[in-house]
Length: 150
Image 1 (cartoon, rainbow, N blue to C red):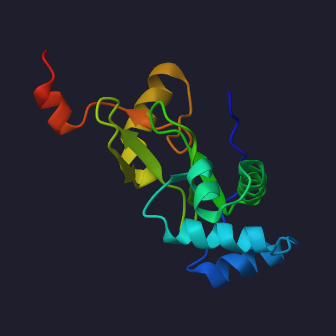
Image 2 (image 1 turned 180 degrees about the horizontal axis):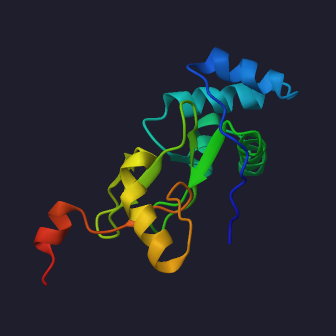
């Protein structure tokens, strides 16, 4: 099982802020990290390490190693949306949580405070503190729920 680092997320607005945040953490900005950050900023949402490696024509192991470093320092998070590979996304302005449909694979980000009632219910009923930042909350989207027999 993959274990997500618990580094506090860094706050940044753009690539220059992200680079400065890395430097404040004592990390140097290699060419691979620069290209990786550019790819993450250009991505429309969470993206796999493999697709970044293909796009950049880099060895996947190097991309994974750099993503793991960025995650340990709170710049990047990875999330599992259904049965596919782990996907990476920038933290920027706080953690995002996810809801994913297992039938069609659609996913949406959710501000954590909107899931607080669910979190509170699980805490009071079962004693667990849950987050949906690493593993998405799974459920049928409205379209799949309508199309699915009862």
